[in-house]
Image (tube, rainbow, N blue to C red; front, side, top):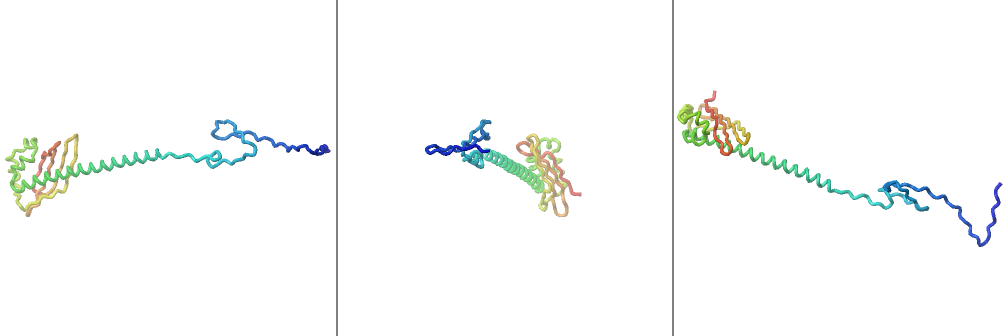
Length: 199
């Protein structure tokens, strides 16, 4: 049985039924504190958290530091390669020039001058000038002879540069094998020599 309702009296305000209050909600980033959402305020959170919150600004500083580091390493590698090529190229050119100068002197009959200018003092102790000139004379080289170098290796060991040169002196009707070794810190001098008819 329903209870009788009192009739509405004029001048009396009718009260609306009360809505139950909403329970407090926890929002991320508020240290576990409850945040009371006012009744009737049902704002949807934005795509980045709280309503109206802007996206975090990304710092590109780290990216630039990484890119600069990589660029610096690449620059050092390229510079290292250029320096290495120049050093090796310079040593190779120097060794070829020494071998060519010595060989042309020997072919043209300037053996004593070649001995003085190109041989290292340690080699001169093992090989006298007379023995050197006599050995070159047995090869009977003349103006028709032309040198060609088929092996040229350069290197440095404990600050001492070394160059090994091998090739052939081609003359009319014969060939002479050549093999030289130059060593030194500043100026390269011949430390080993082989000149013999090709078998």
